[in-house]
Length: 120
Length: 110
Image 1 (tube, chains in turn green, cyan):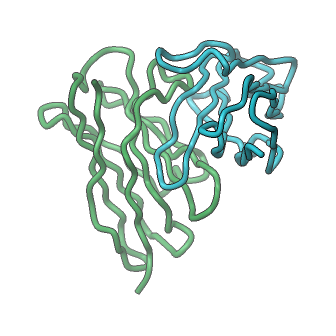
Image 2 (cartoon, one colour):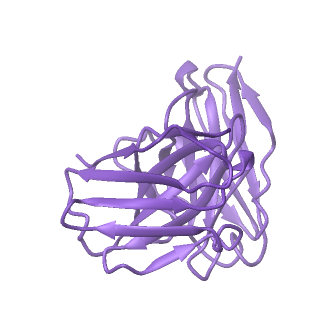
């Protein structure tokens, strides 16, 4: 059974960088065909796709966030990470990591999510 | 890319059927057979219910079904049960390695 777990600071100051790690267990992060994704959900709102990364390191980002987002992968640690710079209160959200089987919108395994609040 | 359009709410009585719509454009739903539906209970992570328009992951009851016509996708829940009360989100592949979600529909079982 594939499991994903987000970790990282729950509070980030405005203008700083939000950094989260997703640890994958129960499956190889290097398996072909899977894209490792980040999605966020603003409080009481809908879902927003941030981007994903393939095990090879290829990355794909939401155009609305592309200038501030970096997703990276460490296959040896079975982890992938999210960096979002120059954050504002508008970046306060629950951040989820998930596995996309095929890269065409099949998010079949999700982490439990972690709330990140941007505040001074 | 704009979010897909869903009705904010839907409801039905136990045993009834309810259909939730998801409207996109010719660049997303209308262009690809990659539409998914997710169920989210309060405080929980979303769960995949339908993918590739009509396919159900293992373990999802066959009461849940999906369809698509033109730029609009639909999720039908038949034989409503109390545990079906949740938020439902549609999503679609939108080309150029980009995914877009709908705004969500709150399903109430009366």
